[in-house]
Length: 196
Image (tube, rainbow, N blue to C red; front, top):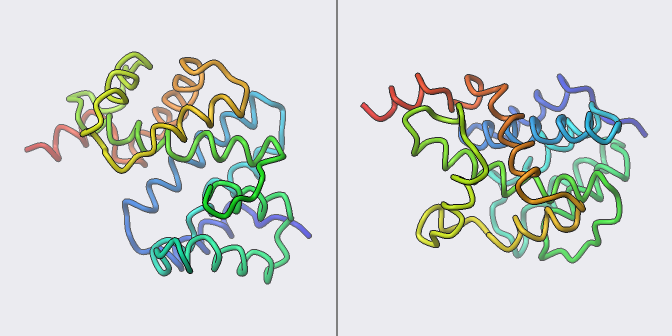
């Protein structure tokens, strides 16, 4: 069983997901996953494709009772993807109660909600993600009305499970996403242009 290449994973994501915001979320998670793979000296491509594909079925099957991520997991098994990838995607959905036992699973769980929250914070800043610091992210985390659907508890649990300092974790994900600011729609120019 082998993981898809990055190009194959991107093609599959685009086949299943039309929403630009969901595609950008997948790219943001991929960025954070790659950064941690390098930091942990793990398989960067496996981490990248796991990040890209973690919400594969969300647009088609958003119902958490019967849909996401169950349909994606079936598709991954049908395609013969590695168990480690399947288990990580299952583990990021807490309600499935699949234990996160691998570093890959713990990393996906830690990066997923945080990357979405960082993107939301970036859209509120005139400079986008450029120059963002953990302090400003933590300040927004304390405002329950900001990005209210984001599970703050998951963000905290994710860093704790991964065994990383919270501020350093936030900085790793900010830096990873900042490298792809244009692709994620989070550059200063894009954010200021959207505000007009």
